[in-house]
Image (cartoon, rainbow, N blue to C red; front, top):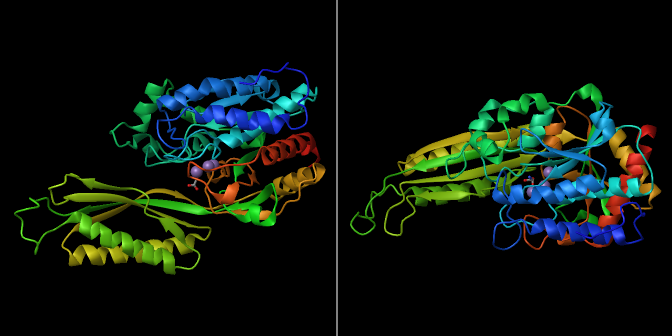
Length: 419
Ligand code: HGY
Ligand code: MN
Ligand code: MN
Ligand code: MN
């Protein structure tokens, strides 16, 4: 943690340097292996919290771990009940992800608030910065746990979702040291919430192509996730005749190709089969069952609907022909979200103030705004990332672009009353 006198304004370039130093430090709290693997309510999640608390205290905020496992830093005005602007992003990562997806959107507003504090600038409204515990939805077959809690839209079913070890989300929260029964009380009052602004890496090539450090997001794609289970019949790999086998993995493999064909040929639809598990997954046993995930994304819900129906029909056909049983259960659905015009305009004004050229752009990635849209206006600032690479250990941003994002947020915070 770089030591500075707490009240000397940051020197030119120091913000970008400190930002990357902090993100390097946060990335150390990860499971062993390439990139960053820090899942919800994991030991790594627990271990990274003191570092984020330090960032919050340097920004003049008081950190508190909420009942949904999110760390929330609130300024005195927010604590006094003044209308509050919410900023932040997610602390959790995918498996072997990068240092910046999520954590950048926690560090940028905190450094921006610290810089204002060092310059003796106070804001007339409340501010809170949230390190959402779960946004990726990698550990549990559910997602946006933290932002749904703030939006007051937590589905009790979510708390029953179980991870691969059979631990329920509710049990995991309690082991993490928070009480999920307190989630309903976390809902923010729309009348007292000014908006939600998230800074996030673009996770795409557009900003690099336009040679812009930052971009203003117009809307976020809609996402749905399904869990498919294909059941056949286990058997001895050496003595069971080839004809007449009910091999769940061969069937699932044909199904995965069918999903890809639908995704490749349906206009406006993207998606992936990201997870696949074989049971009993033994070298000499005909697979009895396979579960895999199907994720569909499109800003148009009818496009997702059409894709889902076409995929369902294709999987049914394979199951029938191969005498396998099939189930396809929806585990998550979030309609797309539109960013508020006043926040987009405010971010553009802030970019102009700090002489950062910018464009408006769509987000093919989902973010906590998909949940926060249910309680307040949302906006996002994208930051250029190298080759648009994300969900990969080589994810990277430059110190200059990081500093640009901080200065845009500093300007946005100071101009907020004018929007
Ligand atoms: O999957 C997404 O779009 C985000 O990274 N959670
Ligand atoms: Mn992500
Ligand atoms: Mn993200
Ligand atoms: Mn996000």
